[in-house]
Image (tube, rainbow, N blue to C red):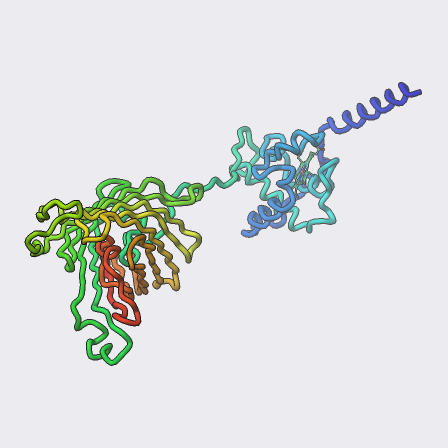
Length: 404
Ligand code: HEC
């Protein structure tokens, strides 16, 4: 009895398989049907939308069949890009979508006539020529993640600090960073005309692209009479697959201030007699920067920075480590706010700066700045006490950047 039943089951399955193995042929009469919406401009887009919602689960995004469904369904979902399908008339395809067979449901009561015709038109797009084909080439492909570079910051500097951005190829840029003297919100604020009357610091610099991922910078700063030379190298660029920019930067600055007058008998900390040499004028700034653009409005950066001064005042170390942070918020089509803050180890200084950027175009940028220091170059900014808002006040300033 048991055996008999299993033979019956086998016959039953053979029957099912033989039914499914049969060609699915539309009746002759439906070949006469013409797509009444053929001229409709939106037809293809509509068809694509429905296809993506209702058909890809079995037919795959490219119409060739979803890999899992190809394995599990019998018969498998038809390859809509194949000659076998593309050589059928519009009428036949419309009829098959309407009536269905086996796992493929009939869509008569699910989709309107117009929507079913839209699907026919979309299935035709798997065949580029829109005619019965000998050779087919799917037109719809799964979109690949773009490896196009995402520019995180529009230019080389946030306020005082470096960003991970390199200037565009074949261009150079000129930058003026100007910081006025500290002002407090008291009567002096107008007497000193917002600090413009006070002694002020200024750095002018030129930035040159010298390779695809490399740029050089030459600057001159008023306070300390620094000349500085910087090199910025981009190791990795953010794109849709890579989440961050990675940049290394090295800057060496030479102070050309007159040699300080050293009292007779001054010694180094180790007791050796002090003599002022050229090497003492040098200071270095090494940076490793990581940045990310989160969306159209928000970009952020952090990293690690190490300042080395060949000569440090008594009681201070030659090196000063710091962790810089930058956040840039796009506030409008032409405007943005940049905020920077550095956590400096071993010093009573937490330099921060705000910049409001107005009317930047591809060629120039103008920023109004407010900061708790009038120093600009990190070698100087991080080793110099910042202003205390209640005591010295804050410093206004501006940045002007121009591309050539
Ligand atoms: C549940 C899986 C499944 C879904 C969902 C599905 N199909 Fe199918 N489709 C199939 C299978 C299986 C076949 C083969 C049927 C056969 O030969 O018996 C098929 C066959 C077809 C055919 C006929 C191809 C031929 O061989 O002539 C067309 C046209 C088609 N599908 C279009 C669509 C469209 C358009 C949609 C979305 C509205 C859709 N299918 C949704 C599984 C599916």
